[in-house]
Length: 308
Image (cartoon, rainbow, N blue to C red; front, side, top):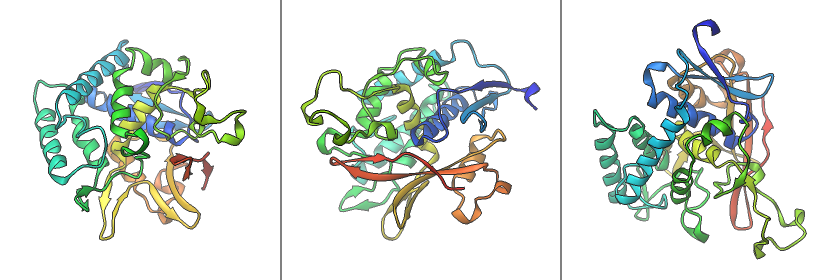
C-alpha cells in the first residue's frame, strides 16, 4: 500500500502527549483542507510512538509556508472583523447572538469559491467552541478551554497570537523534530507546561528571568485546530466535549492511536467510540488518557497513562 502513497513521518510529535495528539489531528485537518485532492490520511508508527501523514502525492516543498500564509490571512482578518471569520472574540464565552453572527459570517467566507481554502476551518472550530446552548445568557464552552478571561487566560486570543507569530517553515521544522523550543504563550495542553512550585528553587510568581517554560508554539497552533475533531455537544444539564470523560478519579481526555492510515471522517467516528467499543477490531491499537486537574488557579493535563 505504501508504494502508492507519499509518507511524511512526524517524529517531533508523541503519541503519549495529549497536546501532540491534538497537533497531529490539526496538521491532518490543515493538509486536507489546503489540498483536498491529496487524500490526506493519518496513521501511527507504534514502534516509534509518533504519527505519519499519508498523501497520494508528495506535498509541495513549501507546504508549511503555504499553510502558514493561509493561517496568517485568516487570523489577521479575524482580528480586524469582530464577527470572524475565525474567532468570535478573544474569549470563548459570549452571547448566543454574537456567536450566531460569527458563525454566519464564517460560512460566507468559507463558501467563497475563490477564497482561502483554510477558511473552512472556521465553521468546524465554532462547533468545537460551544454546543449552541446558553447558560445565564452566555454560551457553554469547550472543556479544552483552560481559561476564558480570568487572569488573562484567553484561549482564542492566545491561539490567535501564536498563529500570527508563526514563521513560514516553523510547522515543518517542529514536526520533524528540527526546531528549537522557545518561550511563548501556553494553552496548558502539554503536561510539561505544569511545573509545581515544589520543583523550583524560587517563588514562580516572581517571574525570574530565564525561568520560562520552553516549548514549540507550532504544536499549540496545530493542537488548537485539532479541536475540530472534538466538538461540543448539548445535553439537558450542560454542554459536554467529545473526548472528555468524567470518571471517579476526575475528568480525563482519552484518545486512541491506530496503525492503518485513516481519513478525517473515519477518525472522527473512531474518536467517538464509547469505552465499551474500544478493542483492536474497531481500529485502534491502544488508548491513552490524561487527567485534567487544577493547580495555582489554572487547569492542566497530567502525564498520560495507557488504558488499553
